[in-house]
Length: 272
Ligand SMILES: Nc1ncnc2c1ncn2[C@@H]1O[C@H](COP(=O)(O)OP(=O)(O)OP(=O)(O)O)[C@@H](O)[C@H]1O
Image 1 (cartoon, rainbow, N blue to C red):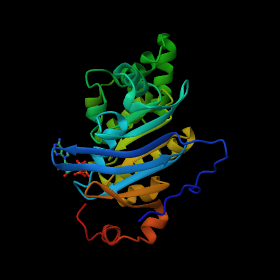
Image 2: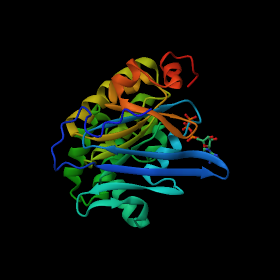
Image 3: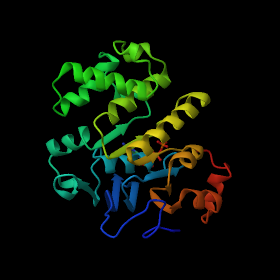
């Protein structure tokens, strides 16, 4: 069921606007098993797309294919690069994809330890990405890192602490600062609030929502938590068995689900 918003969405678009990310016909198989198949969508600048579905529905496989961590068997992932315009990232060299990964793209892992350097200070974790983008002035890098710590509500006085000295929620906020400091235009997020206490989750969600809006970041957000997409996502894709079975504006899909599976998901009958 597709209430796809070729012309709509909550983001104002002018005629010259083009999608930041255009995904067509993505398929990934693991032997005979389908990871995901026939997935396509456009993501517009500043838009947050949520991907939901039960465990094993193909969310992580799809996110891996989009972000270059997995190689799909078919399809295209066209990103509107700053210097060359739209480019199919699946045809990029490894070096070019790595460059995208530290400039215009960000990846927020569920487990912050997967996205942080644990042996490096908080300031170093944030500053590293600036240095990878050519920053060389130590004082400037440290000041920017301190500023970003503050933006993610970490006391800048803890700039020399290691991530292990931080709580889980602080580590996740540090991972977000490390990712956003370089001013990416697209972030992939895999259960960014998973594994945190409910009260910590709520605060992190609030912070993320503010940052995404301030920066005008586009986000592809995978989660099994409908409260997370309700708060963050403009649009939603519901996956089942590797297929997208329903998509549309988040409120529309959640308030008036058309597909029986989405109805079950929304009424929390399904264990997701
Ligand atoms: N490395 C792998 N080898 C074989 N099959 C895999 C592999 N990774 C995923 N799969 C299969 O692909 C399908 C989709 O899995 P995927 O992990 O993408 O789902 P998911 O929606 O992200 O689940 P979860 O919410 O539990 O992370 C499942 O049937 C899964 O068993």
